[in-house]
Every structure is written in structure tokens, then in C-alpha cells.
Length: 137
Image 1 (cartoon, rainbow, N blue to C red):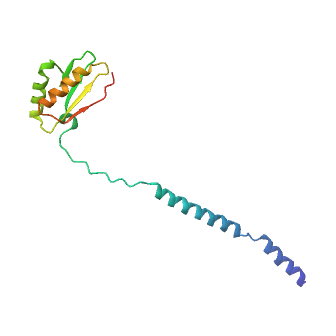
Image 2 (image 1 turned 180 degrees about the vertical axis):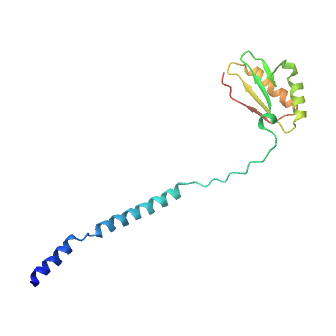
């Protein structure tokens, strides 16, 4: 009789779930996630960006836009300008907005002569902040 009870107890031990392999897997996954999280933190680069100044005027209003077409025509403020009148127009627009800069947008087919002409006229008008913008055509 006693022998029969021992057999039942032995079968219960066989049917229990062994948690040791599962704990091993959990610890390995935990170590994996800790290591990868530390690599992700180290991969970043701290960039100290300066704060952008708050301006009330729009950037389009602040700049004097000068477009040079493929036919070497000079357009300022959506008006066709004679090359001799470029300086006077830039002086007038610069007087209205002294903080503005001259942005020249030459066409790829325009000549360098007209570009240099506009740059010289801008400097003669007292504007030394001149930049070039790429044109699509």
C-alpha cells in the first residue's frame, strides 16, 4: 500500500514544469536589451544649435530679389529693369528695408557679365550682403 502512494508522488514530480530554462532565456534577453540600449545612447551626437532670432518680418520681405533670365533681362520686384537703373532700384529698396540683403537668382543660360553687373550695382548701392540662389531653368 505504501509503495502505491510513493508512485503517485513520483508522477507529480515528473509533471511539474521546469522553470530553469525559461529563466535562463529571460536573463539572456534582459542582458541583450541592456547592451543594445547603451549602444543606442552612445550613437547620438549632441549638437548645440544657436537659437534662431525671432523676426517679425517675413524672409521674403527682408530680401531684395533680383532675377536674371536666360535672355540677360534683369527683373526686380516683378518688374523688368534697365541694367543702368539696377543700382537706383536697389538703393530705393534698401532704403525701405536697411536690414535686407540682395538675393540674385541667375538663369543657367544667362551670362556672367550681367551677374557681375548686378553684384557691382548692389555694392555701389551700399548692400554688401549678396547671395546667389540656384535657378531651375
